[in-house]
Length: 129
Image (cartoon, rainbow, N blue to C red; front, top):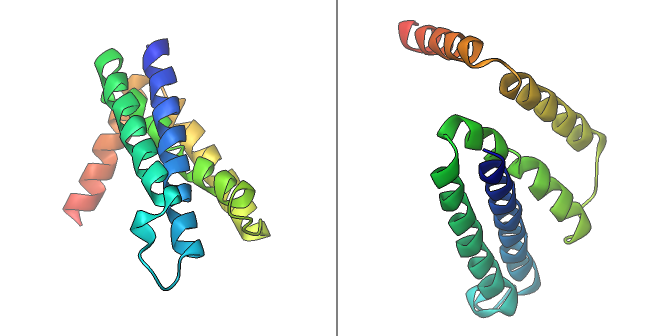
């Protein structure tokens, strides 16, 4: 499972970089076709590589475990948008990331049995109302 987690995090990290590169191509090119720039093409290649690592992670681990690693893409995207795209880090973003990570860790840290019970409760609440 350690290999699955490593591949999952690596795939998510590379996929986050790909989205930032693609957004960079749209930010730079306004009038012409942004899909022909080196940023968009390299972002697309990174997306393929990240998807490859995510598929390989599925070979070594289960989907529940990998859902926890791939959901960290929001954190990676926020960090890379600040570093690469020079977007501003606001207090709302910081609070959002902290809340997201705390919720993420609380769900991933649950034992398997409790997670199944919580999932069943959520399904009952959503479909019974």
